[in-house]
Length: 183
Image (cartoon, rainbow, N blue to C red):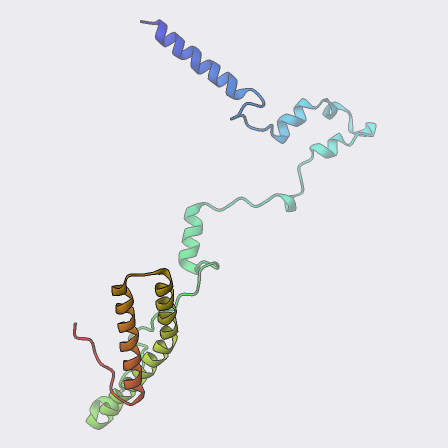
């Protein structure tokens, strides 16, 4: 019963010895300290014309790469200051700073109606600008779907979306008020 344990201990010992051997697949390359100790030239006196002492001096501080910051610290900095590699985040304007109706506009129904019309015009302009940006993308996607042999139902749905978007764009240009979704 004891011989399987002895064999297991022997195998672990052999594996450890094999991995520690220089040139083994998992062996660590020698560090600067161990290679300097293995080199007998370090014992030569510095005044004897040897440059061994200069070789053993650590590199100047400017050439030592900085240690990376811990992950928690970099994440905290990214949360507070953002990440330079990330695209800019467009933050919504807080409702307290959004242009709203003034007390003067709220007190007079005619002026409040003018305020509402300004908001509708702004919404219409934003919709038209977004539609002008998105229509070419949708048309390119439709062309790509046709070229790749997409199912006719998918192509028909995309054509319908493009047709409705163009119709809504035309209606808004003609002065119709923007629709609100009730779905």
